[in-house]
Length: 279
Image 1 (cartoon, helix red, strand yellow):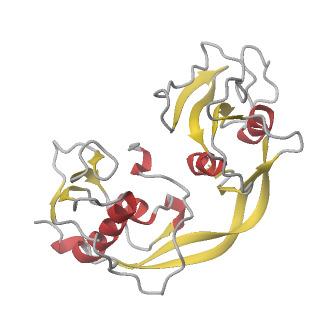
Image 2 (tube, helix red, strand yellow):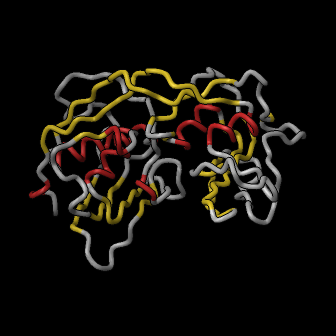
């Protein structure tokens, strides 16, 4: 799992629920055994194991703050969590035994119950109409190749300045590498068997707005995408056509960003008390 925010960002998969959210029911909704300790000098930041990994029965989370747990448990980005209480002040090391046959969604339910049981977290999950960067198909049409196609589309000029990550053959994935071109930060992303919705979740935000898939396309694609987080209109296009995200999407993938109001999930923290958390 990526260390940055320790989470997948901008997922819109949470249903609108009642104002007071605590425990979550279900046969696979709790860890069988869990140990929580305040992180020490030798603690290592990051998570390992759990459903879908090489060690599905054991889940560890090192140097994680309450905020990181919320982001993972509710599959939201940082801007979607609202709290008057500091959620990143303390860090904890968690070691948990996962029930046999648990899924990734079960793991998120376990984390939600862990937050309620051991961190005394009470939240409200709300949906509000907010400005969003909605990805739609550009007038020129898609420029992405369906997964498995022999032709290569959505590939900007390849240079040593922008080397795209290499993904394992035949396996779905999305990986990004940050480099510098003409003294500008450039993100070089490679995707394999990914939908536009997957792309939107990985892009997360554009100009402070969440990125949302508005295409409705379910197909999977293989593509690369290179863009700068800073405008580069006055820069020579050689050796690579450095563009901001909106221009790169249109030129390289045949997609465009439009600003629209869409329902966005927010997690509002009412109270939390980790004082009795540690074993």
